[in-house]
Image (tube, rainbow, N blue to C red; front, side, top):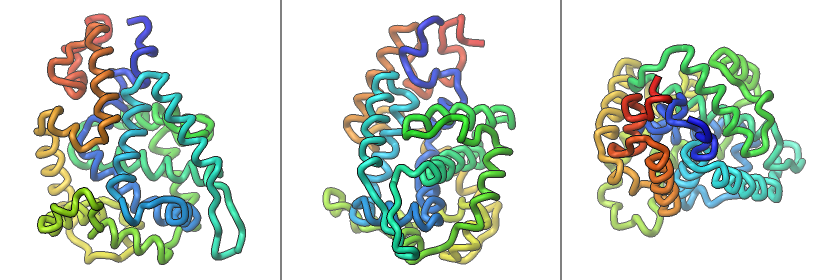
Length: 303
């Protein structure tokens, strides 16, 4: 269908659509934060320039908003949030306690690390949780995410676009990773976070969060857990089974119920996306997730 590129950034036929509509993304998002924390400079950038310690859920929801807009949003919405993010990053600096130097938050190496830790987490958690992607589709997902990386200021050619390239990237950067005091505190915090003020009434149920945080931790690569050693090791098969159970349960939630986890502006963006796709001939009766089924697409795009 002509003009699809003017409706949503990533079309329903993309692999990105399958991964980013999978509810395992919540595990992948927290796992990504834990992985990102192993880069000393990137972690100090978060520690010094955000309210992450007071509002970790806000950070996760803002990340979800960015990912949603550069996936399901219109090109105009994606361009707008890209400009906003680049503007914020451009103004921020990081003090490196090891060298005494100052670094820009929008340093391409730091942006690339954050991108790779994030998208590799989304992909690996979804696949391990049961999303049936072939190797070719996994490569396609990472190739499609080069476009997302461009919104934060990276050049697509500098971003890993296949599983082999992503593996090579992590092999290259691993010698520079370490568990700083900030990284260790971040993982402890993500395992047992302080609830934001508006959620303090839920404090009695806080112990129910720990299994979620632990699952995020156990989904990390073996080498990352080996660096943190925050929890005793458990059998790999148990972690995989827990990821599958989480994914199955979350994917069973109706879309209108699940979407309440997002910020109001994100929900409005998703509603507008459904309207545009419906007007373009897609059957949105089952929401955006329903469009992963080719039978709900216009005939000329169903193949």
